[in-house]
Structures are given as structure tokens and as C-alpha cells.
Image (cartoon, rainbow, N blue to C red; front, side, top):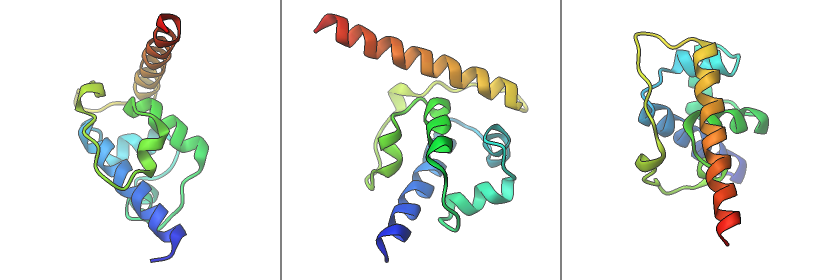
Length: 116
């Protein structure tokens, strides 16, 4: 497998892993990042590349560091995942979840810096 293909495979596999750990559907995440559900499927199955800006948005939504998308081994991130459920989550609700996660992550990082 070529390096680019291997990287796309790893990213796609991890996006799917974190999406499922958060109990989000492909359709919900696709709407959040302004693509179709079909395009989301292509990304998860390494048939399409994803922009770094989109990975940044997904890292906030899933409450994980961006580097987790690049790691080949499955990482247990259960402690950092908060699940929000309703029948359907719209784009605005996912945006709010993303902002809350980003705020919490930044707060934790700031506390680490202050405590050093």
C-alpha cells in the first residue's frame, strides 16, 4: 500500500471509530462538515482525502487531539468522550457540542500550563 493510501486508510478508519464511539451517524457528521453522507462514506473507506481544516473540526466534535486520526493503533479514548443523544442531531447542535469540547480541552491544557 502506498504511503498516501495508507494514511488515508488510517484517517478514514479512525474517523469511523471516533464517530461510532460518539454515537453519531454518518449523516449527522456529514452535515456538520458540509458534505453529503456518501462523501462521508468515501472518506471513512479511504476513497477520498479529507482537508486538514475538516480534521480540526472533527477533532473538536469528537473531543480528541488531531494526532489521533493519524495513529495506526486503536487508542482507548473512552474517558474523553461525552455522548449526546437524541433522535437526530442537527448541524447547530453538533456545532455547539464541538465548541464545548474545544473550550473544555483548552481549559484543561491551560490548567496544565499554569500548574507546571
